[in-house]
Image 1: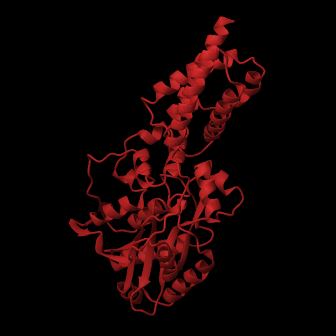
Image 2: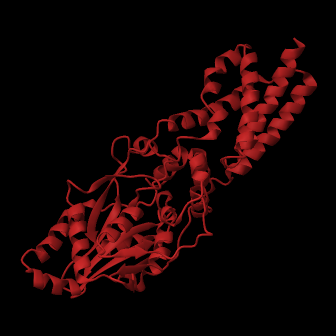
Image 3: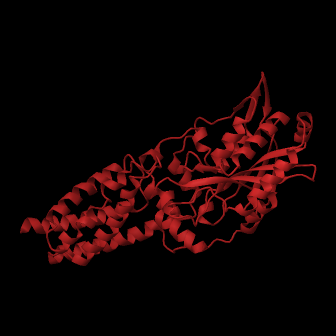
Length: 410
């Protein structure tokens, strides 16, 4: 199952971003237990009870599974009297076996949900993978804790728990941030760095730097909007960024400031992570090798004054398959994939014209492809492309030169 997840995620580029494995079976009992703990208390007693409650932001270090390359965020709700509830509220619950899950994820139609389950069970997942979990205890008043407790309980009800997930704008990290901010009686002020304005693509590449094929898949799908500079709030879709911002945030209320985080501790120490070996070659190495072969083929074709049909077919199939993926992205609800300049060259035209080329009637195809290849290369001035695609563009351009030369002689 792990290899199946890895294979599907990389090939379809539908990274199961910021999602921790769901333990849904325990959810209902935990919510009911927490509710029962509070049911019979008066307002005064409840305020006293909230003094013993800690609410924390949990930030989980990435591990080697593709869906966890970006880390994870959850909320810890704990009664420190030692006899009450101790639960993790996790906005990253999903059902990978749901019908058409991968397709729905790619098209931006994925529903995630808020799950609540025992804190010890949540930590075991990250202990197993050797991932560090950092806990930031929030500096909330009893009234704010009560509001956040009530909001989490309301959100965890089956009729309210499901939400429409979005790759950058509405994930399990931003959901945790938003519900915490909404329950604070004041204004959360973050200490920002105005000179730090990475793009979404920059941040994703940084998180996938040790997984080149996942990084390539992201770059293939992400369009020109992913190359725009981001502000501090947009950067908080990543768990590590939100943790950093919470550490330096202040709550402003009635003319006074107090830190948002009163204590930071390690819930799970970093362990040994075992990295699974992937495909031995990087995307760039594969495409450079393809370009080298293409140069050799081009030289042979030029010398013999004839094209090699099998090589034409191979390039058209590879380019057309990439093009089909990008064409499907035109219908995705993800805002950052809708406008993608890579589709200028890599589109279904290669499949549509394949039979004509096989029959020796591809003169117009090669002329159009030459123009598109030049436009594609010019587009790299405005958008960052998937690693090595320029090599494939040059391979096509070389074949265009050969065919246009041969057609001109005819």
